[in-house]
Length: 408
Image (tube, rainbow, N blue to C red; front, side, top):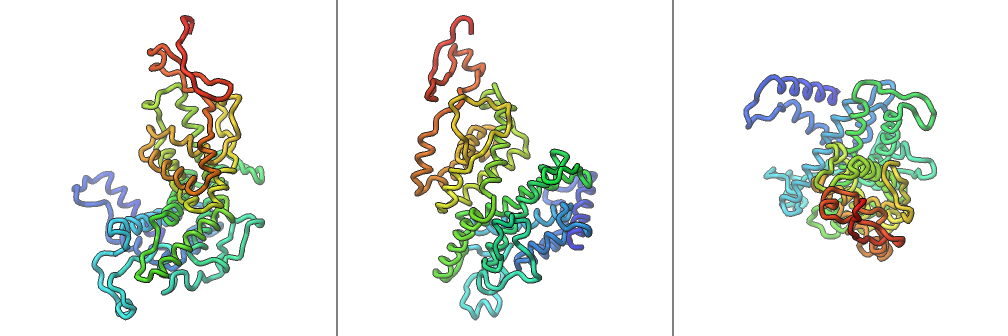
């Protein structure tokens, strides 16, 4: 009901905004929307996101993607973004304005009021204490060979696993909608309502961004107790380890990033770097994927190695491949993504961070990057023709420049 009310409020606001010119100082929002967002954030911070997400589905099938689910994930994504932005702006202390401390907080010796994490900060007084009630199956959708009892996990890790599993399920659903049939059953699949595919893609990006921010280096939790601080850092390390071991987050991110990279390279074949074009959706997804990959491998040897050995097939047969090309891995895909930097703002910076995290204290990954050879010569661009030269590859994959002959 809350989500439906907020969706209705948002639709009304958008409708009014299209016909009314608002002053620059006035935002297209109202107090009702703000209060609903606050209620959703408070509920999610008590570890209720899995239950909220499934409840927002249709009455016939809670796995159906609905506009209410889009509203929910957007609100939580914004809350997580605000949480980390507040931490960065206040010197990594997580202060939340000048709110008065409660009696309990003062009794505990707190001098500043910190903002609880939007996904699990209010579950219990102790981080990770308690659990998610109601018999919610957080391992839902996970392959039986990888399923584990969620009761063994800290609540924060269980929430992150739930998000990763939902992304996997939604990916299959999106692929079925794009193909028009289900690969699992062979049945025809069509949108239940106009825009279902767009809503599914929106939720996938939101969930992945939530994962990325929650696993990032900057996601350390402030505390006056240094032992508690170390404990919470251990939880983040454990979360990365579990996500790499018990979910397909690394493989699926590499596959989706490869699809974007291959499609962009094929669509822009023959163009120079300044002419590269990517759709806004692909730009957003690429940055989110690279950021998530960089954060999930951060100081996690298991995930770094998995990133290096995960084989990724070619996603677009229009992309030319040299005969000497080696088997492509997730690490290759990440390096290839840097070639799209001119078409996507901030992608280069996030690629550099992700590459650094992938090779940090991992000699095998560093050596793999060093030994990479060019698989394709630079496209025949107008600039090269004007200079009278062309680029080629020898049998060992080494690049050489040669003059054009009179017939070229």
